[in-house]
Amino acid sequence: MFTKFLLTVAVVALIWFGFRYAQRLGERRDRPPRTPSAGKERFTPDMDGDSVRDLVKCPICNTWRPAGAASCGRNECPY
View 1 (cartoon, helix red, strand yellow):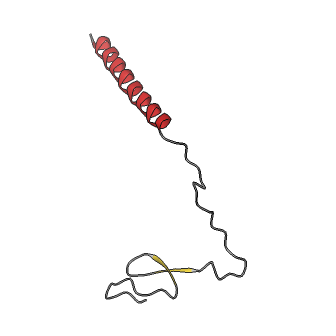
View 2 (cartoon, rainbow, N blue to C red):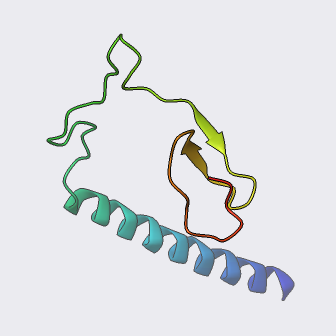
View 3 (cartoon, rainbow, N blue to C red):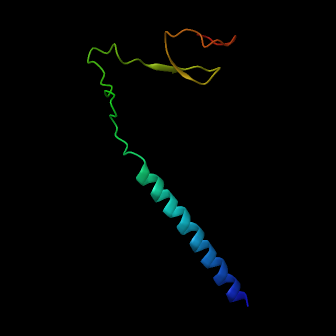
């Protein structure tokens, strides 16, 4: 009796996961392939160092910002 129950659960699970896998494959087939450049140029910094900035972490809002950036809008923001 117990083996019939386990076999039924295993068959249902196999059908369920097989259906989900088939859906995932169908969605992947319908989507256009992803390309890293997709019409945009890749960022390459200049060798002079002006295009790359060091970031500092704001202790209040926990975001990374350029050192000379303006305030984030919060009252206690140190920048």
